[in-house]
Image 1 (cartoon, one colour):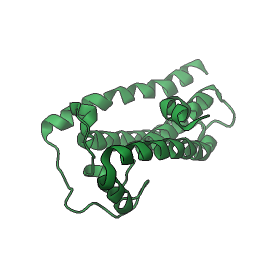
Image 2: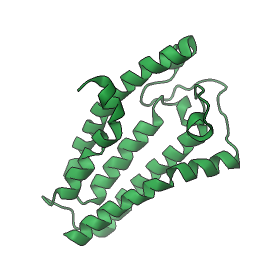
Image 3: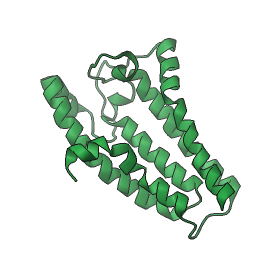
Image 4: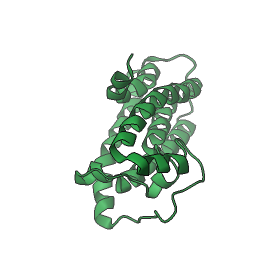
Length: 183
């Protein structure tokens, strides 16, 4: 599959393990308290990272495109993809298929690696030397290096917009509940 096609289908491709977990009943974990405590905590933490990233990712909330180097983008060039991976792994866990969590993380890493390489070429073309310097300063996935002087604390309005942009993620929690009702 060509890189651009993977980019366009990234959400659907990354979510394939959720479909597998929904359909799978093999070796299910039957401890609802543990399942929801661990899976729910991971899901909400991932959602919090997405909200934090949205507070800083200007074009999703305001319409104009700028290079974002504040908030979680100080530590990772792809915090939303990391949060998506955690959220997808949490959903797989919540569907009581813990043995599928590691393959899910590997699958997401493969999908998002292709996507990120495509995005990096586009961002490099759009933002030029500034983006290439950012690439050299901040790790692709995670690390402790950060862009200096780029703290950027968003205002209340931006936080409200970010929460509004991400609240739909809570609907994904209906999938494990539906699986539980069906099985």
